[in-house]
Length: 239
Image (cartoon, rainbow, N blue to C red; front, side):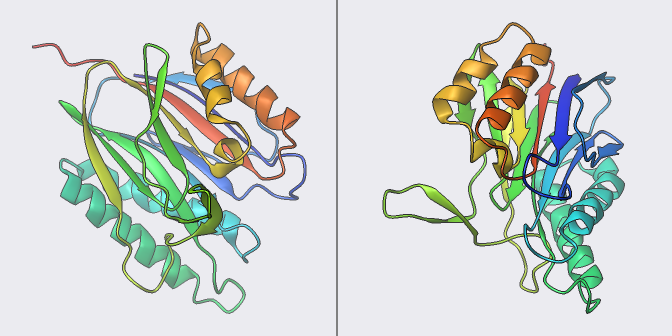
């Protein structure tokens, strides 16, 4: 498995409330640099992006806390039910930390993949996204937890996140390990780049070029929010 990742404050915000998890590595850099890594084929392998609630106290802390819980508990994930249980644990932990009066109301989205022996569990809570990338074909496989506008498009108002009092209802989809790659991103990317722009980006020759294309397009679009993404190449299972 290989990954190329990037997280950045953007051109308007004063701090980065996004965070990334790749295996056991986490990052919340203020000034982004494209990073490429290779990982052994040990499973489970988990990668995720978390977007701390913009404008809420402790958004940067919320994303780090959530990914810290996921990093700890995901080592025993074997089924979709395990993934759901882990996300409930992350929700509870962020909620507990948010009981501090100075942090009340903090929350975070999460979107990621858990690579298992023969399948990939795609999971999300909130509006951060996961796309499958196969032979240059891009398809969203996550579900936006967001209010839809009159034209049927998701708005920036999300309907659930980690850190809320009520139990979250995570979205988990099982996909076969067939050589498909995955793009994980916060809405700082998907809210700026068009679907056509993202499709054009993933047509580039390699992950480094894809990453540079996404970074350039997001900055040219104003980068009004923190923006983060990870490209994950998952090897196919051969019988």
